[in-house]
Amino acid sequence: MELPVSVRQLLEETAPGWTLGKASADVSDVLRMVLLIDDQGQVQVVFRHQDLFDISALNKQMGRDLHLMPINHQVRLRDRLGIKTLPVLPALTGLPSYIDKAVDDLSTVCIYVDSQTSERLTLDRKAFGALTAGFERGAFSVAAVDIAVNLNRPEDDQSQLQSALKRFTGLRIQQRLDDTLELPPLPETAQRIIHLRVNPNAVMGDLVDVVESDPSLAAQVVSWASSSFYAAAGQVRSVHDAVSRVLGFDLVMNLAMGLALGRALKQPSDQPEGYVGYWQQAIWQAQSAGILASMMRRGERPAFGLAYLAGLLHNFGYLVLAQVFPPHFKLACRAWEVNSHLDTAIIEHHLLGVTREQIGAQLMSNWGMPDEINTAIRHQKDPDYAGPHQVYPKLLWLGRQLLTARGIPLGVGESVPDAMFVELGLNRELVEEQFDELVQSKASIMAMAGMMQS
Image 1 (cartoon, rainbow, N blue to C red):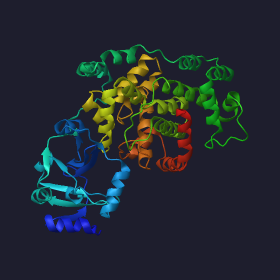
Image 2: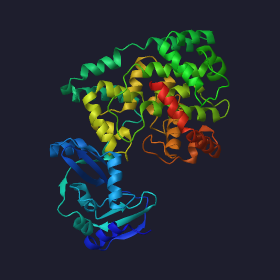
Image 3: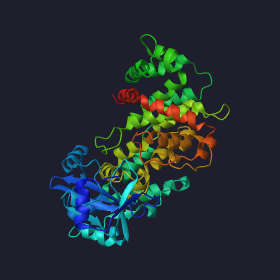
């Protein structure tokens, strides 16, 4: 590929001896750069791609309140430089720059120059040192491999929660977390739906009565059934119509449950830039889990309703973090933004000592939710989980990877081995086709998410 003129000129003037070649699987020497801003101006930070950038540590060192530069600002900067992708060449922008000290320990560094190709620049330590001479150095990163996220030891969750509480006692949140995890009652609508779920004699009329007793919920169910996604013939005039003619008993029961629980905690006003909102994530994961469950072999399929509900509630711990840890949540938002290359669980474990999956599953357990849901939420980041109800977290994990691969920003994507499809009894080619169709209906998904949060 041809390097942009500005990039080639900078390299030839400052760092002769660079090479351009295909990227390898090894990312230990790859660099990452993030652009930050506050009321004092703009800066850029360079660190190893494999590390977690601790923006809180940088702000403490500098006495500032830096956060990720808005995307539109970054676009204008790239346009000004005449490049589509901003490589990790801080001298290119002319902004004040900070280099993490761990970068200087690398014998060579690799830099991607085009997000659309796998080619990258390689420079030795001397050449990169020349490029960054005069820039400030500091220690503001943590090796991600040293952050031991608890993926598969739920028996340790309680002790980790208590350790997190002790760490943050100074923020006066210990009692608030106790309150959130133990005291809030399950919303009345959700309680009534759970009673319906375990009642073998429950009929459609019972569910209609529950939904109609909550006017807001009733309006949302009717709006859902009327959406273009379901293309119902004729107008949907009532909850009974929505249940009997369009959505069905099981879907409405789990939709109502997800709505009731989602409304139990407030949506955060502070959102990390670059991430889709809570309800968008919920709908994407619910739809994908439902699709995967329905494509499994008869006799091996999990309950469609529980798979769908697991998707709706998979990110509930995010709401708990926002409501229980407001000061921490703000820091987490800034950390998520500048570490989009890492899974959120790594960032949360570093900041708090527990993850949203651990906290969300704990609250669901305290509320007496089905074990399938608790397991799905707790183990959704662990594709190797083997235990009771293991199919549910695997469906969530697989659905997230398939959506991420299609450009839906649900976090860091991972490659899916064929063995996962074999284990679930799924035809990979047919699943890929179904997900292509799902993503093509993005406008409908967004509309449904809008209904959920209205």
